[in-house]
Length: 365
Image 1 (tube, one colour):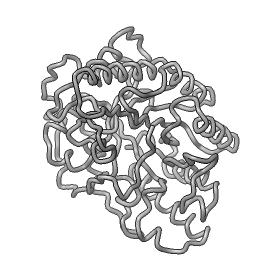
Image 2 (tube, rainbow, N blue to C red):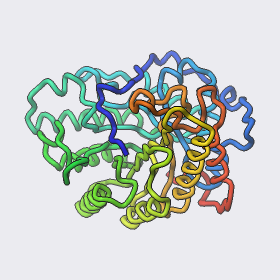
Image 3 (cartoon, rainbow, N blue to C red):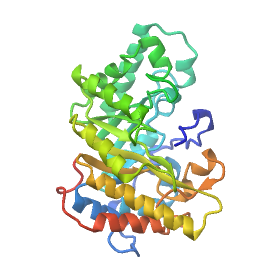
Image 4 (cartoon, rainbow, N blue to C red):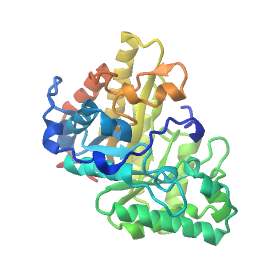
């Protein structure tokens, strides 16, 4: 799997003003689902969350986007507007407009809201990068930022990606970053501790990519989280991003085995950023292969002992990040650019429908 591209390339959608908030749940659920039972109803029956990353611009301006989200998903996650560079663009000055809009939309449509992300090496704004900090100063910045953001959404965000992508891809250990280099490797412990203090009931996750299968990086992630738990760090779950190519992804049994070993540590697991990009031109045959992959991954999540949610990184190919980041690829999501359900959607629908032994009432979050 290709690592996440640099932040400077990311098509980041600006957070918009809170004036867009007044959507009512009745309007959202009025849309007709031509494919039958909405995915969220099937997921509720299985006791698992199903969701999508949400961008603020289409949430504000695209009624079909809002209606499809509300109809099909029981969870949403902030795509960009909760990241540090957007929510605190200037030191001590916060812009909550986009995050507040997401929280309002989730509440009005009976959805769980994931927070993403409090600490990420690629989301440091200029005011943070362009200054020489002492360890004590940067710890205070970290503490204040987490207390402010998590505290604002206390009781409204079910789980947070506290630290995102801390492990290095090429060499063992943590990647170099402002947080690591100034505070030290224990910045993760501090971040989770600060988040827990701000909202003791929120589930706190570590999130990363290329850790979905059994490999060197996932072994490191396992050892790191096991050690954090032994130190008493309040970490409750691990997120597997799952940005895959439609015909190249870990075997389902490997996904299950990997998730289960983290469950054995007492951790929840979630698939947090799933997409299966297709090489262009996109053909019916490729869409069918993508559908098989989606079905296998969802069945793996249902089989794993403590997987509580699967979220795709976007709702519709219309607003997907894939074409801008992976030249020659497109069409990674469940709905096409006209909001029509793709074969992948139908495969997920089937995976949630068959052998529907209930895992409880609603997502176990």
